[in-house]
Each structure stands twice: as structure tokens, then as C-alpha cells.
Image (tube, rainbow, N blue to C red; front, side, top):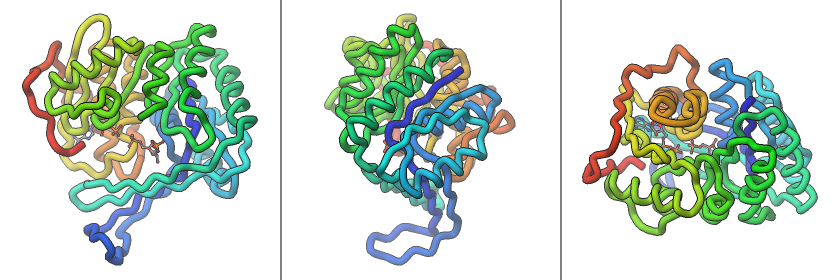
Length: 314
Ligand SMILES: Nc1ncnc2c1ncn2[C@@H]1O[C@H](COP(=O)(O)OP(=O)(O)O)[C@@H](O)[C@H]1O
Ligand SMILES: O=P(O)(O)OC[C@H]1O[C@](O)(COP(=O)(O)O)[C@@H](O)[C@@H]1O
């Protein structure tokens, strides 16, 4: 069983437009309304591939009802933690060349009691878990140490933990020794406080995160694929996307694919990159199913071309 935690879930609206002009009126050409938040997306990706997943989410207000109703389309075991504040709505605007502009709300404040109930629900939900994925931003009212403290509690339950978050919550989580962290380019650069221009910079930054406590680092790099740095070495993998539709949720699909592929080593990296690339070819934050996956197109290399420059798309 894979358990995911989304402290700050959302109802995602992905709006397709012919072009985005600041200050202009835009008539949408398509709209996708989907359950959102990184842990929820990881769970959606797993169950879309026949893998059991349980998602722990605080959900309040009319939007919370909508989120739970949207989730009923998936065979996810949903553990709902009652909350007073409404679930946020996040909007992504997609242009015809697949450029994404994201507008993420902060989310409603979680009280101390709701936060404690969320942490207890995760520990209970993890009783039969092989992995727990803690993912996404923290809502107002929740201390940056929330994920770190959760990881320490889960360590006692002997479960592997993957973390996909950013900023202070990521920095704090590293000190708790998670099995795996999955930053994207921006989150990794922020964590080491310097720009990353080459694959060599990415490996240096990932190595730094490992020195702070992360077991393995899986860095997602948009069209440059992903880099894995762990005890056994460094790998880089990438896959072509022939017609990109939407990268919303691609990182979540990538993490889900990595876990589904075994959660360690080059084979898992290939699986992750195949799932990420497939997600990019699908609208909104639609998660890939087996028929979308093209693992044979993934190119994987032990080691990296340290001087290879990263593209500008992420
Ligand atoms: N334009 C693209 N072409 C090919 N693969 C892509 C593209 N964008 C994303 N991916 C795949 O999706 C994964 C996650 O994308 P990324 O944008 O790095 O994550 P996040 O959504 O967390 O920001 C990448 O590691 C890569 O495998
Ligand atoms: O918690 P955050 O950082 O605001 O991110 C939440 C948003 O990220 C998503 O999980 C998509 O994630 P990625 O595009 O990074 O894979 C959306 O579903 C959600 O709206």
C-alpha cells in the first residue's frame, strides 16, 4: 500500500486559451476540473495503473465536498480529515505551445487541532504502507516542521518516506532523513540557494541535499528528464514528448512512476521518466494509464554529462 499526504489539497482548474495577454479578456477553449495537490496526484497516478493507494487529505467547505466528489471517480482509499476552512482552487492557464501559467491559492488556515488530527491520521493510515509520500505546500497555520516531525514519527513505523515539497518545509524535512526527496529544478535551486545551469550543477545540489539528510534525490528537470543521486551513484534519464499538452502534475506522475518502478535505482528512474513524459502529453493534470506509457523511448545513462546546459523550459 502507498499512502500519500496532501496537507494543502486543491480543486484544480486547467484553462486552455489561444494566448495569454496580461490585462486582456480570454475566452477559454477548454476547461478541466480535477482533484489536485501533489499527494492526491501521486495517488491518482498509482491507482490509474492498478496500484493500491490511500490518500490522507484535510477537506472543508463546499470545495472540500467537491474535491471528495471528484476523488470518487478514482479507486483511491480516501482518508478525509475534517477541516473548517474551504479547500483552495488552483488555476493553471495553458497556451497552445503548452506554456503553463499557474495561480496557486495559499489555502485556508488549518487550526492546531486540525493539524494534529492530520498527523495522527497519517500515522494510522501508514500501518500497512510500504511508502508514505508527503507532498505539496503547507497551508497557513501549519509550521514548516510539520513534514519533518511526521517523518520522524513514521521512522518508528519503519516505513519509507518520499518528500515532494519546497522552501522551508523541504529544508526542515531533509533534517528528518527521508528515504527520497523529489525537487524540481526551481525547488532544488531554492534549497541550495544558487542557480542551476548544468546537469553538473544539479548533481552538486542533489549531493548537498543528501549531506543534509536525504537518502536519495530524484530531481525532475522538465524536458531535460530527471537525475537520480543515491548511495549507488548518479543516473540521468530523459524521454521525448512528441506533442506536449500540459505539464500540470507531471512531477507527481514522475514520482508515482518512480515508486511503481521499485523506488530505487535506474529501473525506477526509467519508469518515473516514462510516467512524467506521458503525463505531459495528456490534458490538464490527467494521469497516465498503462496504454500511455512508452518506457522503451526513455534513454538512461549511468553518470551525467556534467557540462550539459539545462533548457529554459523549467
Ligand atoms: N517538455 C517535456 N518533455 C519531456 N518530458 C517532460 C517535459 N516536461 C516534463 N517532463 C517529464 O515530467 C517530469 C516532471 O516534470 P517537471 O516539470 O520537472 O516537474 P514538476 O511538475 O514537479 O515541476 C520530468 O522529470 C520529465 O520526465
Ligand atoms: O502545494 P503546491 O505547491 O501549491 O502545489 C499544488 C499544485 O501542484 C499540483 O499538484 C501539480 O504539481 P506539479 O505540476 O508540480 O506536478 C497541482 O495539482 C496543485 O494545484
